[in-house]
Length: 289
Image (cartoon, rainbow, N blue to C red; front, side, top):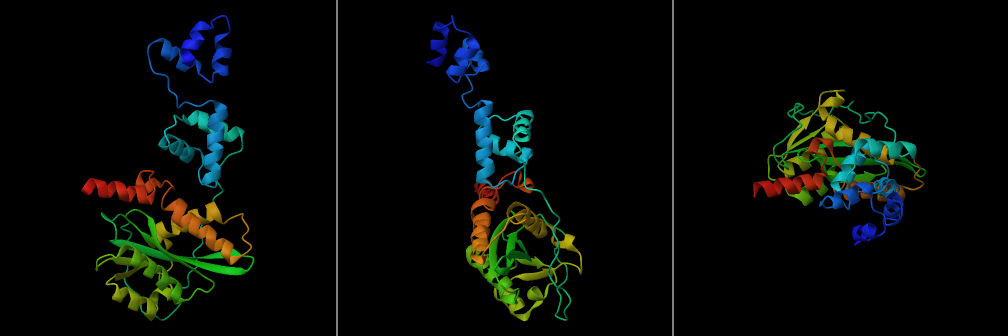
């Protein structure tokens, strides 16, 4: 055992022996007092390597607060001062944020649904309220448009669609994906802005087919669909701004990886008690069984 070997080699400086054996002084002294050394405490070098690995794995989505939570969630002691120092000294920081700009067009003569959601963003169970929106994504080959469907309960992206044109089929395809994945009971509320895609006859017919209730935000009021627009803001800050995508295929692959691999399954969400959407849902299901 490392600690027993140290006891036999007291002719050498204790700090040097601990360094050679990769043992902390505090851990050795704890062992001397009969305690159990914390084997998960890392040296600064190893802690920095872990921070850099997480930063690369999650592609820079976290600043120091998120990094601290991620480290602790993975079972490593991480003090705020230490993590902030290591990140600051090594130039590790979250991607810079930009404000999200509303892009959908609500200037049309199609029927508009009332704002039934009324900013009640906290349903008590999944598949009660879904929200939707569309955003622009630029590539060297031209624009792509991303439509998403978000379950307000666990903020999971349950459906999405990417197309080179912002026509009604982009929102119907995202809704269809969501319905086939979750098969919600009739009565689910679907909330969006007043964009012509959501007000179109084809989309409204799809909502009726699935037994969903339509809700739309007030004209020009982005706060009526704040969680969905907030998701676009995070997505663009973490994967789009400052990066170049040469092809639409490259943008599509990135979007799939972000939504299905990172966001839904790994990314901590403050509204969910710093759990990922899938983990939050799994924990809720266990509690109600």
